[in-house]
Length: 194
Image (cartoon, rainbow, N blue to C red; front, side):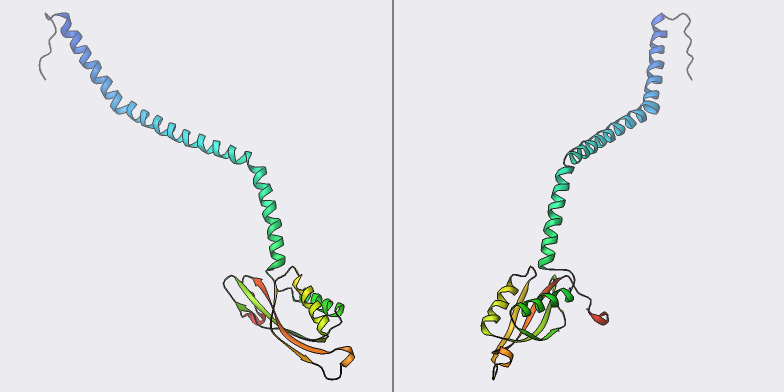
């Protein structure tokens, strides 16, 4: 290292060396200590801003919570209405009771009510039920009118009507048809088959 003798030198040589040493120490401290602190401050500030945004969004959601609850209640009511139209279960007993009630009200004799196998469609299962009854033409029309007013979707397919010989018990016709109703989703068949 060079001989740094400051004796017999003007005062500004010492000042220049002092300034250079102070600048070197400042630069070293800046580089080694303060640069990492500044990065931490920038990262923490960015994270704080993100958290403030999340809090703001949370408060907005909290303010809309009653609206969401009301909407959820409305959707639940709509779901219940739709499940009456397109249930998720067979409800065989309920369906038999309704059809039996209709045949009794319309003075029909229910001879056969035979549920068939389910047929899987896109998002629902089709459930055919073979029905045979005896009654009159007028009562048959009333029966189908009342059947159309069920909340559950029921289609009538493959209907045949035959005149009865001798009007057995006041009944003039024999009719057979397939009632098709539907169940949302797939249905587990007896025995585990779908």
